[in-house]
Amino acid sequence: MKIGILAVQGAFVEQEAVLKQLHVPWKEIRCLKDLDDHFDGLILPGGESTVQGKLLKELDLFQPLLEMIQHDIPVLATCAGMILLSEKINGQPSAHFKTIPMDVKRNAYGRQLGSFHTTAEYKDLGNVPMTFIRAPYVIKADSRVTILSSVNHHITAVQYRNQTALSFHPELDKDLRIHQDFLGRCS
Ligand code: GLN
Figure 1 (cartoon, rainbow, N blue to C red):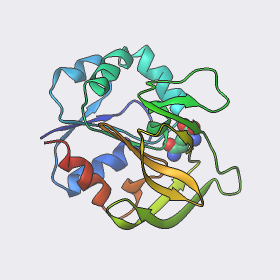
Figure 2: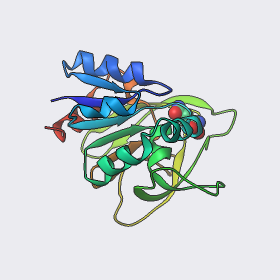
Figure 3: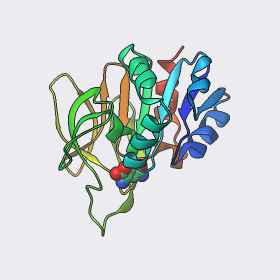
């Protein structure tokens, strides 16, 4: 098994550290040629979604990655990655991959709660530690989207077909179950 990690910007090194702990090989996706290898799963890391979206287009990665997602490669997306997948971005005229029928709000926790840590219930896993950094949350999701977790009545994790999208950063906590769950879908 091999996982592709989008590595054009943001927190990809932290994702690599988790895969290393779990003894799973990965490949950084930085340019079109990196897609020549076969991957069994795709990680879209945190970072700055506007910059990532722009770089994806400039590097000609947008269309091939969109097709991989549409063709059901398992995806784990954290924070900026969640924004990249969302069909709508609140207050913005356009969005990115638009492969999850939902509406997200960027930097949704405002300045004071820009970053925080909590523990909350996650579907089938029980309590999971969650680190939020200038995080988005889901304002509205289509009924076909499964809600995996909510914090203070805001949706913070969803599953839609092949895609798991999280507001928070599981790679920054010691609990590896969300990654293990994702890897279980990749073989
Ligand atoms: N605020 C960032 C954005 O809007 C996301 C933050 C993150 O990925 N930690 O893209």
